[in-house]
Amino acid sequence: MFRSATVLLALLFASAGLGNAAKRLAQIDHVDQADIRGSASVSVSVSASVLPSGFSRCLFYDDFSQPSGHLPDPSKWQVDLGTAYPGGGPEHWGTGEIQTYTGDAANLRVTREGTLKITPVRDGRNKTWTSSRIETTADWDFACPRGHRMRVEARIRLGGNPGPVSMGIWPAFWVLGSGYRANYSAWPAVGEVDILESVNGEARVWQTVHCGTSPGGACNEPSGRGHVSDGAERASWHTFAWEVDRRRWPLGLGSESMAWLVDGETRWTFREADLHGDEAWHAVVANSKMVLLNVAVGGALPNAIAGFDTPTNRTRGGDGAAMEVDYVAVYSSWL
Ligand SMILES: *[C@@H]1O[C@H](CO)[C@@H](O)[C@H](O)[C@H]1NC(C)=O
Ligand SMILES: *[C@@H]1O[C@H](CO)[C@@H](O)[C@H](O)[C@H]1NC(C)=O
Ligand SMILES: *[C@@H]1O[C@H](CO)[C@@H](O)[C@H](O)[C@H]1NC(C)=O
Image (cartoon, rainbow, N blue to C red; front, top):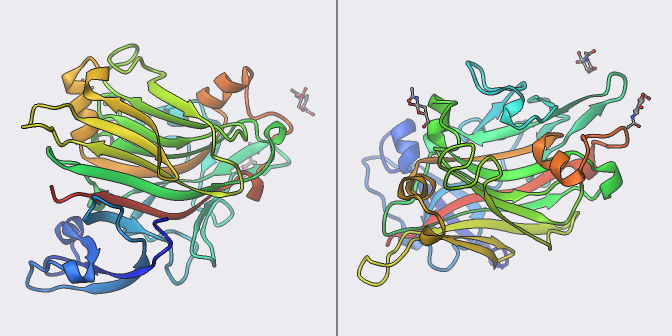
């Protein structure tokens, strides 16, 4: 629905130059709602979705319609490489996944159709796997202030390989507290929200919150508090979104909540009252965040769902195992 009417939006940089501060202030608004505060502005026309009802600002937007080069725009995305963050990140990205992340075109590329494709690839000779993982750069960290709503959304198509040859393939669209960058011991305290996870070629969607302390804690780590539902058929496009509502009606006394949506339909709602831990809740809803997109191979979640170690000898990489992303957006309300 959001894509049905295409409008011209302007990307407005609200202060002189294109430095970090300016980027952080960058907003995409309807042209007729343009709000130029700085002394200089750069206006970039992008063809984008109509803002969803109830949202009036765009804190981040990429529809991968850039002209050339296989990598996503480096001013927006950092490509994570190897098997851990440099300088002390947990091995195998903390999940037991077995692939090595690269920035190679075989694993990561912007397509001619203006989408981003992340493709796991198996090396036939030595049976190792490569894939890709990207995260928004620190310039684009976003947060939902008290009294506001925020929505993180992406339109995604998962590869259509059937289950038996997809064991261990684990695509994900998620947000993580950006404080993690400075402290690899801060998980899960920084808060993690999985907006789409799907494993082993299933059409099921896993949507999860991680918070507090591990093991145990307010979010029952390391599993997290989550919800599983059907309806993310492979090889077709779906819109996955996570919304935070920090308005407290009435009179500032009500409860904050968050909701996960697939194709505009709410799949799961999680309220402040569902989480017995004010600090943990606050971290998840209010902390500064980044968006991540990756396709892992193997690891705790696909292994647990399969009931055996993944990937298997039959697991195939390539297009049928890929995750294709049409756009990623972060919207917020003025009020
Ligand atoms: C496996 O194959 C890849 C790609 O050919 C190569 O880069 C890597 O070094 C190989 N690993 C081993 C352990 O041989
Ligand atoms: C990193 O995060 C952990 C968990 O929140 C905390 O206990 C620790 O003090 C933090 N370390 C630093 C250097 O901030
Ligand atoms: C996978 O293939 C290897 C080598 O062909 C074989 O030794 C191993 O038993 C196979 N594993 C399974 C689970 O079939």
